[in-house]
View: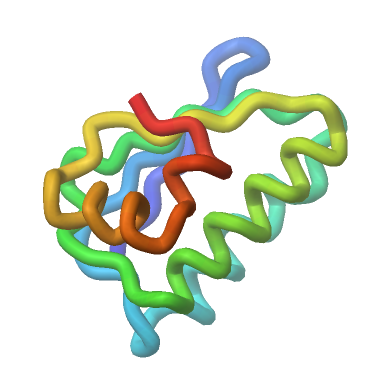
Length: 100
């Protein structure tokens, strides 16, 4: 999994590439840790090149969403591949996390 984070004004863009699974979930958690420290988060997570997420990945997305919500921020996941979107739908995460 490759994670690219860039800021444009007050918005943070996150681009995910590859598979998010047990082999790299710890690194992904370290990559997104600074995002959980922001006071007024506004995140757009581009999933165009994300091929897969395991339950550990879902847990980390939920953790990030809870952090964002607790601070009155905004988080949206975009361009999700159908097979990844299906995982979010089946688990009910698409009711918790905004997906465009």
